[in-house]
Image 1 (cartoon, one colour):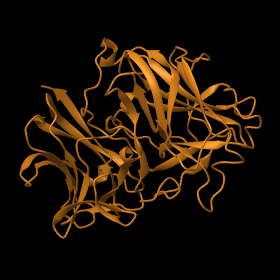
Image 2 (tube, helix red, strand yellow; image 1 turned 90 degrees about the vertical axis):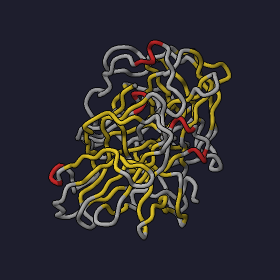
Image 3 (cartoon, rainbow, N blue to C red; image 1 turned 180 degrees about the vertical axis):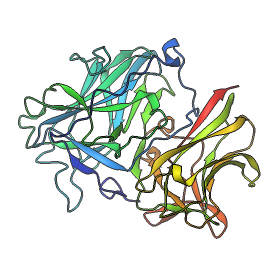
Length: 398
């Protein structure tokens, strides 16, 4: 399959001044992690929304720098970070220039207050000379950073090159465009911040929410690596298969496989879909067993599903459905009329080094072909196990 340079949808060459979003949207309270409870392996029950990749130049003609915000799941250390660096793909320009510069990757504490922007001091830092041969580098800190569960931290990207406007590279994030509808929470309270640098990329200026148009939402692509085995957080999805949506309706269905999860029950579900044309039949979301037996179902009126762009829909089931059985379940989307809706998948980055805890590790996306379930097809491959629907589960502990 193609690497960084051949993506389902090209990364947007951005990093300019212009329209900014308002104040930071993340004003969450401390989570259960504040008590020191780390997320259990395999417990993630959601993905993230994405319409495309979006790159930010670190330096470059507009002198921009970047920060990824997250809330720590554990008290202890952060030893390394993996993220997505993009240079100019074949025949494209604007993603990188000159030598690519020298990235400084710093882990900073939060400055405090409601805006949640990086403090000026760094808890740990490392440098990277970008390479076309390693789009997803693992950068290790020589001296790990100490962190506390439940507190907010930032990964800050600057450019140490003597001429950062000429020698620069980009860092990729996920982008959902014109995001205004209700949506599931982003994992680990993650967000993307942008700053105009007063010296072309070496030093951040005032921080702003990363948004070029009202309603845009950016989500970091990053794997934050702790000091103990199994300590990973972040978002490891690294590609958007928006050019290959699958129809929903008639005999055509899509589903997300969901593995058993101990001590968990499902009360509702989210799915990101688009209504096709003038479709008027309801969208039905079902929890089914592998053999198609119904566990729970709920409907969404057609008028509640956008047709101008993909958007989240949400259903609530009449009872809590246990996930701790021995059998895998499927979240199935169907409709009575042919080609009434469509959905597309996003790609897990586990084959590029992102840990399985940074994606949904309990299944993968499928669609029906000839009446049988099969994994997504992309880049000439078929029955792929590396794609997930854009979905989330509302869960409670049992």
